[in-house]
Each structure stands twice: as structure tokens, then as C-alpha cells.
Amino acid sequence: MNLVTVSGPPSSGKTAVILKTIDSFQKRGLEVGVVKFDCLYTDDDVLYEKAGVKVKKGLSGSLCPDHYFVSNIEEVTQWGIKEGLDILITESAGLCNRCSPYVKSVTAVCVIDNLSGINTPKKIGPMLKSADIVIITKGDIVSQAEREVFASRVNTVNPGASIMHVNGLTGQGAYELSTLLYDEKVEVKTLVGEKLRFSMPSALCSYCLGETRIGESYQMGNVRKIDMEDKKKKS
Amino acid sequence: MITTQDIQQKTIADLFDQYPFLPGFFEENTLEVDGQINEKLDDFLNILDDEEEKENRAMDKAQVIESMAEYITQMLAFLGEDEDEGVNSITLLPGTNKSGEKEQFEELTINKSEIVCIVGPTGSGKSRLLADIEWVAQNDTPTSRTILVNGEEGDKKWRVTSGHKLVAQLSQNMNFVMDLSVYEFIELHAQSRLVEDVEGVIQKIFEQANNLAGEKFSLDTPITSLSGGQSRALMIADTAILSKSPIILIDEIENAGIDRKKALELLVGEEKIVLMATHDPILALMGDRRIVIKNGGIHKVIETSGDEQNLLSELERMDNVIQNMRTRLRHGEIIRQEDIGF
Image (cartoon, rainbow over all chains, first blue to last red; front, side, top):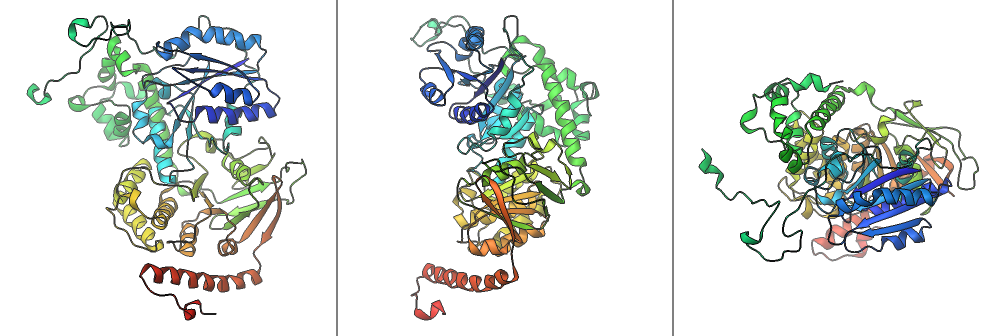
């Protein structure tokens, strides 16, 4: 089985891109499965079911979605193998820009959209910088110049990635993407012992444990403060 | 090919001097140099050796240096390309339509400065044809078409590198979304293309865009407040002059607020290969040829005949009548029988 992790900021078009790509896989007779990770709610599983693929969803609820992802990825992989899939795609939203949901040996795809603004590439951490393939969406509604500038900014923060434009509505580019994602020689059996490409965002403070009151005396553990000092004073 | 060893021991000042585009990399990767310009790159990045700093910035020292070396390699290659390596022609070799039948042409070569129209109903396969061209298909897409560049098998670099896109697109649905003035907008695009004479390019695009637009605009107009016609004029002038892509794909040009004939002349003058999906008779007849798409395949290729070209001037006269009325309405005038001129 092939395994692909797809991530990207909310509403960037991950599901639309994956659905169009699945289309191409199915035309080649490949059995596809999707596991959708989200935080509070998702009904994308219904869309995937409609597309005729096996689907599971996982909601992280009160946990950091990245931590939830990595705690479940092995079970998800085993599910895919048991179901006899040729290719399993996991989809997760990068809810904080520090997100880093990629595993070293697993193809990592980041979906990001042209409308998010040209400063977005520098705001996103490992989710964009350590991806193998970066898909840029919503190119049909912005000017050619903005597309070019956006793609060159993405290239500056991740020069090693393949950068592609995919239209989630018409599917333009999705067939091409599918050829980069499936390799019949690849056979994932387990992820036990594999490593993440980058450490995940860390936390463990009193608020993680359910504290709701505000004030220094309620704050414990991993707590950090904004530097409110006037910078000019330094000199 | 620049390796990590090539840059690690150099000072940042030396690196900036040697690679003038490198400050952009520091900026996008939020690396602030400030007073440390004379430090060696390796020493400067030592801040990332600190576990907490590494976690907070979500950056790994080895990865940053590797990525920087890759970026420098790419940019040098990009700057080193000269005009000789440009695309002079693309050639389409037939594949099959949706029913698996061979397409109705043998070989179709389109040279630069040529305009080819693409016609056919919605869903007939126009997007697939354009996608095949963009992907430089090598009998490896659903249509089994092959696309040659300069008569040879296309380089795979056209597929997935950001600086090498074969096709630039202009369509009716496109908008400007950045909060910038016309000047800042062109400047940003020129900088991302590493253009040397930024000021000259801005002036050239600005003049050309105004030459195409029905209503003039200024350099400090915010791009988001340009009219539809002005936006299209700026997009076309900018794409013609600044886009590196040798092929321009146009999805209709609405007949309002823009001189379409001049727009096509500009693109052709900049030695672009122009592909235009249109059912507007004036635009279609301006093309040298038109590709008819049916059932997912190329059904036939029609040369624009002399008779058709003669009709063009008549069509343009009719078009002018409408344009003239539009202008008169805008100025609060009354439309009269003689305005029609038939």
C-alpha cells in the first residue's frame, strides 16, 4: 500500500483536490481510502463516501490535532492495509501555522491557496517547508502575476518541493498530481520506528489541563510571556 | 550546483554580495540579519542549535542551509538562461478522443507569435488539451497525446518547477486580490522575476496597459479598484512583458473597456504563442487557425480563410458601432438612428 499525507490550512481546498485526484486513481482501477483528521467537526467523510472510497474520520476535540494525528497514524495505516487499499490518503488541517504532520518516509503534500495572501508562505512552518509536493489552488480567480509571485514565494521557503497548480473545481492538474503520488513499487507495512520530519508544537501548561481563570497565579508549566519592553531602550 | 559546503563558511555579507537575490530568502524564511552581517553563515545559524529556539522557529539548521544551497542553485540557473533556450514552437501529436478513436490530425505545430483559437462546446475537452500542453504530455495522460517543445521531447522541468511554467493563463474570472497600487504591483512581480531594470519595466507595462484600456488609470491607482477593462488591460500587458511563460492561454476577452486587437498584437509582438478559447467571431477570425474539439479529441483544424478574413473588417465595423454607442451613453448622450450607420 502507498501512503500519502495531505495537509494545508483550513479551506485551502484539500478535500476538493483529493477528490479530483481520487477520480484519476479510480480510472486506473486503484483501490483508494481516505482518513480525514479534523478538530471539532467535519462532514467531508460523506463526500468521500459518495466518491466510492473507504473512509474513516477522526476528531481531535480538545487535543492538539497534530499530536492526535501522530498517535493514530499507525492504527490508520493498519486499517488501510486490512482493507486491501492500494493507496491511503490522510487529510489533516493545519490549524496552527506551526503544524508539522509529516513522516520522513511518507509522501507529504501541502495544499495552499492563492487567496491566502503572498505573506502566507513565510507564516507557515514545517507543514509547508518540509513538504515534498506543494499544491497551489484557486489559481483560476487571481491574476497571472499574483500566481507567479505566490509560487515564487513558496519556492523561496521550500526550494526542494515540486510546486503544482491544481484547480479543485475543474480538476485541471489533478491527473498530473495523481501520477506523482502513486508508485506501485512502494509498499508501506508499518510506521512503527519511523520518525516525524520535524517535532510537533509543544504545550503543557495549566490551560492544557482545563484551567479557565486568568492571572499569573493560575499559570503553571510551559508558559511564555510577550516581551512588552520598548526596544529603543536597549541602546 | 551549489552545495552546503560552498556557503557554510562564508560571511553573510559575502554571500549577499555574491548572490544579490539571497536577502529575499532570508526575508521569506524570517531570518533577521541585523548587526550580524559579518558573521559566517554557520555561526549565524547557531541560534538554531538551541533546542528551544529551534522548536519555536520550527526551523532546523541543517535543513535551512540545505534549502539555501538549493535556492541559490535554482536562482543561478534561472538567471543563466538566455533567449536561445526559449520556446520557439510547440508540436501536438495526436492521441485519442473519449471513445478511443484517433484524433483527426497528423501533426500540429504552433510557432511563436502565432494565434490559435480553440473552439468546442463546454465539456468537450478544451481544459484537457490545455492541461496536456501545460504538462508537456508524453503519451502519459488520459488522451495519450504527445507535446513536443521546439520539435523535441519536452523537458520535465516544465512540469513542477515554479520558475518554468510553460503556460500563463488569462481568464475572465481572474481578479486582483492584493492591496497594492499599480506601481507596487508591477514592482513586486518584476522583483520576483529578478528583473534588473525594474523602473523601466514598470513604465513599459504601465504605458502598454493604458494603451489597451478604454479608460486611463494612474500608477498610484489601487489595483483592486480598477474597472474590469482596466484590470484585463493590466493583466495582459503584465503577462506579455513580465511572464516568463512562452505560451499564453486566453479564456475569452470580454468586449468592454479594452482594445482586444491591440491586446493580441502586444502578445504576438512579445513573441508569445497565443492559444485562445473563444466563440467570439472577431477574436476567432483574428487567429491564424482554429482547433475544433469534439468528444474529448481534436476533431479538425481549420485555417482562417481569406474570405473569413475579409469578413473580419465588416465585423469590426459592427463592433465599433456598439463601442461608440457605449461611449456616448457613458457621456450622457442620446443614441440616434444615424449612430447605427447601416
